Image 1 (tube, one colour):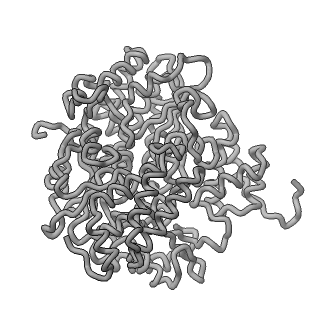
Image 2: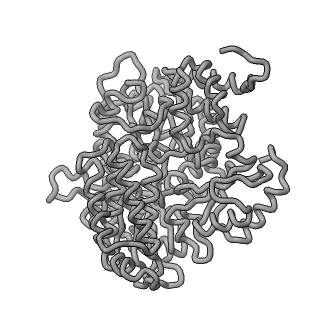
Image 3: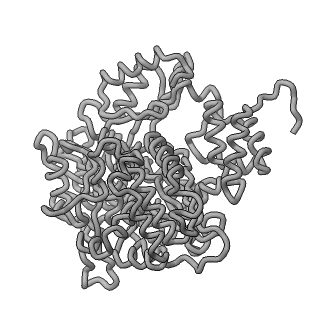
Length: 175
Length: 437
């Protein structure tokens, strides 16, 4: 692969992490999923150029990596599709039914209305993406949502408001 | 029940039980040490087989029998895949266990790895469990440092590595061959069986896939005995040939319209009603129960008059459910609309169908179309018939799909219509009226 001057490259740290994953399994293809997580951690999404680079590191055809990345809904392909913070709102049976005042779907609606976006969209300032999630396995604290890698349960409108205020105050990169 | 002693959740109330030092102070890893030094792998397999332990992930296959399918060892690797992809709607016991007692899970992995002569254990953890990820990562690091994983464990010639692997948001990865495909870095399309993973699994090598709670049970079985395990639960039904019974303690996750949702431990065979009343502290605002999902939406629904059904592998089938499933009752009170369950179940399976088998990919989508228009008040009198037809067409049972995802969808659709036909018909004919009772 030729290295054009302005071609984006993954970081050296990501490359090292990917190669470590590669050494962990009997088959280099097994490193694809952990590697995609490394890329996602660095970039926040998995663009096609990164897939090509990853395929090179693992001696795979780019289509093999593409096949995998396209299967898992967690990985977004486009930078514009993901904000600095990703929020997954549980829309499963328990969250949807758990709270008379605020079940899973109303929570999703409430959050989106507050942010002025539809589910799956990102706020104009690029700060927050809201996605609907299937069961988050947090039924004991329904209704629940994941904010990045932190779970919030027993949510009420007030709690959501407070959380959004905190997220607005936090600068990106501190999540 | 009165003299029942919680085992799997025993450490949950102890502060910092997830730390190795605290776990060790309560006898942690001593069972593994004794087993590795004094027993043969065959003896462990036999003890687990004799205990009657059945898989806690949903299907309930006898664990010792599964292990006995492994071929005679050769020089190559053997894999133990730990299914921590808990994603069935309404289910959270594995999460609770991994967060509160990761070392019990790891000790179970160690003993089970020894029994199956595994060379490498891989924990496949769903991405949506970040706290479990942190807890397990710390616990694995601690366990390696203490010499519980790695080479020549406890001075024996047994070596075992354990790797923590994160999923990326796909329910199908909880299906054991889907999990294996995902571990191999591919889309998680389930495989046609046979060959079973025991013969040709991860990287075409002998592989065992077990649920987190199943492996956690192995430790107390080896610590106490198979007989102790068999003293808890429900013995085999003599009327059914080869019924393995439902033995052992079980974690039950109760959620929905109850006063005290949570994860509680009880013997298999406790009634659904007792779980709800005694552990869930009854239904919120003293309301009546309309329906209960006994163990994930794939298992279907129980009506109020079926709540005395014992929560075991066999009794729930007799009550028209797919089985015990994940043993996590979701309670819906009388204000709940069954049409919402039908719609949400269809939406879930449509979203999670992996797309490999056309009857599942298309069937779940058409079911969602129908359930959606019923829910929106545009249902037609024949729609329930169409839904039932889909419910009879998709799945392993009618022989049209590779894995059981479609059977779960079919079961949810069929039992919902069968048990709540009147309410659904009433809704279709006059959808604007509030549904009560």
